[in-house]
Image 1 (cartoon, protein in one colour):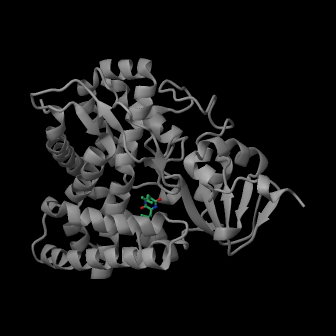
Image 2 (cartoon, helix red, strand yellow; image 1 turned 180 degrees about the vertical axis):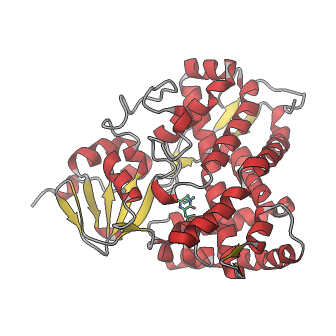
Image 3 (cartoon, protein in one colour; image 1 turned 45 degrees about the horizontal axis):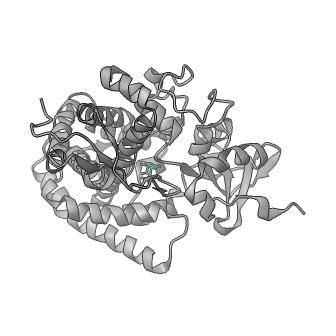
Length: 411
Ligand code: 2IO
């Protein structure tokens, strides 16, 4: 018998405190790691995670029927296949690219300036809780065309929905709370969808409400699920990415100075942040047919998790993977937000993140606004850095001091 206790479970406290220190062990010693508590297999090598995400015959997204559908109130984009997937994905893509994206960038600048305003004269901000979380919800509401006056309510419901999707184990009480949040969000959206069907605007809720697929419109259930899908997918990773970007830059003052001098380096800094510390750390798939990895068979019917965080630190894919380096030649910044990305932060294959281009524009816009404030940026006295989350992961807070400013940040 192997000494099973020597295997660091991804459900252990040690892993939760710092998953990155377990990744090398997983890739080298347990590339097919079984977690009995969640009856799932964990894959951590870059080529294996990519294979799970791109071999759609062998690995499907059927896991989302249990993992997401109860709180999404219907099927999300990632669950769809074939012509339906292609058609509906196109509708969603149009909602935040091209002309729509240009408008959204203007809204993002206004949102960011508004949320930041009270902290400027103080010269102190918690980039996660004061800024990132409200900002992430604002930006998602902008895409959808929902009322930002209701942001706090929506943020609360979003929290419950996201908790359901990203928890590896839920108590019955928490499960009930998450489902309550989802039901309230669904009830909140119902009259909005009815109104947009009557008087459509340019927003994504209107586009989904009036779209036709094979001559048939989407049902309320279909629209609701896609709206919640976009809300969660836009809001959940955004505050984490903003905070992680600034944490890494502050920890690497030379790279921070260069990015401040030349914001043209921001896409590289964002791409490297996504590689080094992806805000979505794992992706589940349902195994449709027996699959062999590193000599071990994962049986049809099993659930498998691709560990993006570990894949992105695989020395087979990236030289010196545990170093944050915005100049790394093996990242390929230009393709980092496309289907050709080498890092797996946006997934890969047919279901690769539909919002990648939006995410890049969003984070770049906000970071370009924050950078000029941060000439003397430092951690606030007594601040202790801590990350939370296994599925989606980011700083619990990021308390920063900077030189107070009195004038507006929006030029
Ligand atoms: C929302 C987990 C934040 C997605 C999910 C049910 C489906 C899909 C993802 C990402 C990130 C979220 N899965 N986005 O991993 O839409």
